[in-house]
Amino acid sequence: MALSFVVAGAAVAWNVGLGDRFPIHAFAEGRAIGASVESLRTVPQLPFSFDDIVNYLSGAVGKAPHDRQSDYAAFESSAIEEVPLRISVTRQGSQMLLRFQVDDERGMDVARKFCKAPFFRSDESELLYALLSASEGIHCAISARFDVLCEYDMRPERTVISFFFSPPLRLCEVVSATP
Image 1 (tube, rainbow, N blue to C red):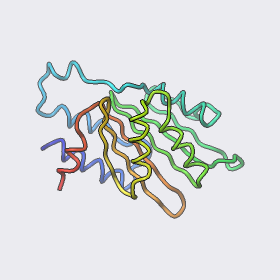
Image 2 (image 1 turned 180 degrees about the vertical axis):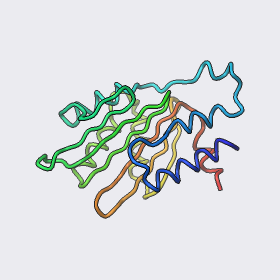
Image 3 (image 1 turned 90 degrees about the vertical axis):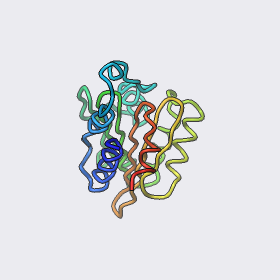
């Protein structure tokens, strides 16, 4: 019950645009509610790391992030570059938020290529593609190795695609049960 409140709050926070550093620790705190101390010692991990994502994106956009910290990385193209986009990756514990802000179809290609990153299995790539091709809004999917919430927001000035990755917590069931 408490987790559904946290997920609903996160969805609202995404919609009002809290920026790149969305407090994804709220999900970890929601998971802890009602869990025993023993179960929290073995928190499941994602099958890919923060560094895996940042290294992949560095290769995909052809440059290192312009801002890199231990739990945050941001890529931003300059006004003279061919593909206008902004990408941010935020890690909190075993959860990650990846946000693409793109201005055109060339920027969308970077998001599509991410879905085929080598750390995803083919079934997971298909799942991420399906989320990208879903209608605007918040959608959820579960793979054997992780859960993913995807927000697809088409704005007049740019499209924003956010992926929230979590170890398997059955987030989709919680999101669909949220009134």
